[in-house]
Length: 212
Image (cartoon, rainbow, N blue to C red; front, side, top):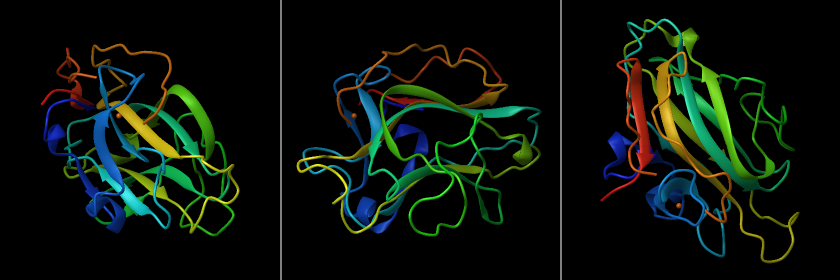
């Protein structure tokens, strides 16, 4: 999913902030990984909202015939270090589960107890490729991947005027991480490509958030 053609491949949002239009959204930014748009939580001068418990939710996909499915996406983020966090979660048809990316998350836990170890937090301002092995879900027909973001009541650990965000782009689920046929830029200036050419029957889902 490159987030270029509405309704963005059936991508949805959950959480009070996002449903009120203050959380996850899709839009253009300077330095998007591919094309013009990204999906992000944290827009404008104020950044992401306080007390967020919100997710960008991909449509359910079938991995019934998969052998080595891999989730691949690109991300950039500025998240209050240790206090707010982001992670990928996966619905297996019965419950939300918490896989780790290849190479692991930057930190195990935030400053408060969370349901599972492993979080993106701190700052990574350039685009970073991430992969998740989804082999644990092969054979399942209703697998849902979501990008989950949580924040506390304030950003007092950060300098005045700081605006946090988590942006994702060029999302795909494919056999063995098969390429979606798109390339992107190397940096991002703030939070907001055309849908990638899948180029292979092994691609289960691909979106780059581009188009109208």
